[in-house]
Amino acid sequence: MSEWKNCTLGDLGEVVGGGTPSTKKPEYYGGDIAWITPKDLSTFSGRFIKHGERNITEEGLKGSSARLMPKNTILLSSRAPIGYVAIAENEVSTNQGFKSIVPNDDTDYLFLYYLLKFNKDKIENMGSGTTFKEVSGKTVKAIDVTVPSNKEKQHEIAKILGSLDDKIENNRKINHHLAA
Image (cartoon, rainbow, N blue to C red; front, side, top):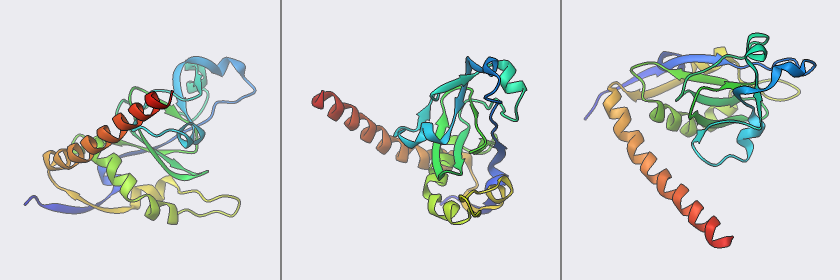
C-alpha cells in the first residue's frame, strides 16, 4: 500500500486569488481572456470549464489583481457561495470570489479536484464574515489534508473517480438528448 502524508493545501500548489477589472472601463471587457465568476459555476455541472459568461481584455487583466492561470488549475469559489469547484480546461482568470490552486509538479490536478470536492463542507465551515461568508487565501493554504505521497497513486485514485464522472456526464448528455 502506498504511503500517505499529512500536509496542507498550500503544500500541494500555489493558492491564487482573483480580481475584477473596473466595470467603469468598457475596454477591460470583451477580450479573449476567459474570466470565471462563482455565478458561472452556479449552474455548471461538469468538471472542466473553458470560459464564463464574460471575457476580459489583456488591458483588463493588467489593470486588476486578476491573474492568468494555467490549464488544469483548480478553481475554488471562496465566497458567495464557498465551495464551487472546477478545473480550468485552458488558461483562465477569475474574479475575487476565488482562491484557486495551481498544482505543484508532484500533485495530480484531478486528484486535487476530487480532494477539494470531498472537503467542500470542511472548507465552507471555515468561512467567516458578517455580510456573507468568505474563506481567505491564508485559510485555504492552511487546510490540513491527507494525500498519497506518490503522484502516480494520486493519479490512479483520480482515474477511478474520473471514469465514474465520465459515465455520469455521458448519461446526462443521453438524457438531455432523449428529452429534446
